[in-house]
Amino acid sequence: MSSSRKRFMHILATLGLILIGIVAFILLTANKPQLKKTQPPTPLPMVRTITVETGTRYVPIKGEGTVRPLREIQLVPQVNGKIVFISPGLIDGGIFRKGELLLRIEQEDYQLAVTLAQARVKDSESALKIAQEEAAAAREEWALLSKEEAENNATPPPLVAKEPQLAAARAKLKAEQADLRRALLNLERTELKAPFNGRCSEENIDIGQYVSTGQALATLFSTEAAEIMVPLEDESLYWFSVPGFTTADKPGSPATVHTRFAGQDMSWSGQVVRAEGKLDERTRMVSIVVRVENPYGTRPPLASGMFVTIEIQGRRVENATIIPRPALRHNNIVWVVDRQGILRFRPVKVARRLPNQVIIESGLEQGELIVTSALNAVTDGMQVRINAAQEEKIS
Image 1 (tube, rainbow, N blue to C red):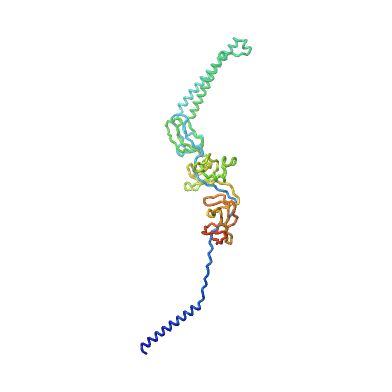
Image 2 (cartoon, one colour; image 1 turned 90 degrees about the horizontal axis):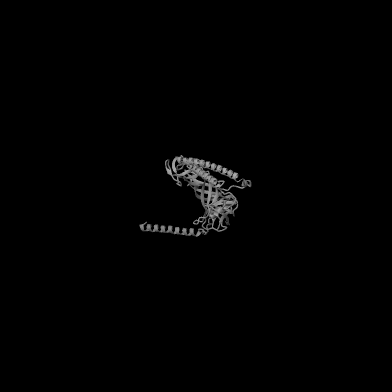
């Protein structure tokens, strides 16, 4: 067979195979089932929920303030002189007890003044006795010379009875006695004693120093109690008792003082005792005073100058619940979900908003589920999925 014939046979076979492939493809395409267009189901949004637990709640009122002593005074002498004694407690940070001798001023001059005053009193007493005897003798002499008038119960003239001299002697004695009392008082004032249990916050004296009347020698503050001034909005006063401000005869609400000091979280029990007399004109806030008894009874103590957080126990609310702030929506609406996943809008009554929580007074029932997560689009009655793994209870 010639080469041209072989080439023709190869081409013919190739064309046959191509034709068979085309026919097979057409047959397969014609018998292929038609695919139907379907709409995939829309996924339900998943939400995080918490379980409502109702009960009795006390509304907490929180604020901040700085600790200050109940009493703080300047130690000031009432007499002049040189200091001859200073108590070990009369130093910065020193501790002293009520009635303790804090310092003594040299007493010699004042003791001499007492001695001289006592001598003048004795002299005046003697002069008064002489005047009394002379007056008595003058009355007897007048009675002998004027028997008829004496028998008629008449009295001698004042000059005859030496009444002016007697009055002058009595007045002089009273003046000398007053001078003696003043000398004794000045002698007593040479010793300055502590008026209360307390501490010294500042002193600027030393042994041998000459001090004058009215000179401030030290600053003392009491340790029997401490006070914290807490600025609050006037609406907060609705929830607790402030004696003399919101109530007339009820005691102030209890409070707890918190701070962190010396690496420790500390707390003290206190009580609201009063409010300051007027509102702050700039901030329109009311300053409430919380008192803590025996602030230096702990270690570390509730020291003056500490910055602290105050939590006042407010009024009790029955059948209330506490929810996170994100769970409260616009216009006091809460999203409630039933066990079938139907979301409903529920209006609630808010008792008080806290920094991270909200106290709900009414509108929620025990065991209900409320949504805490955010949704881009939400409608009343929509279907949602509950993330059971993240469901939790409100404490």
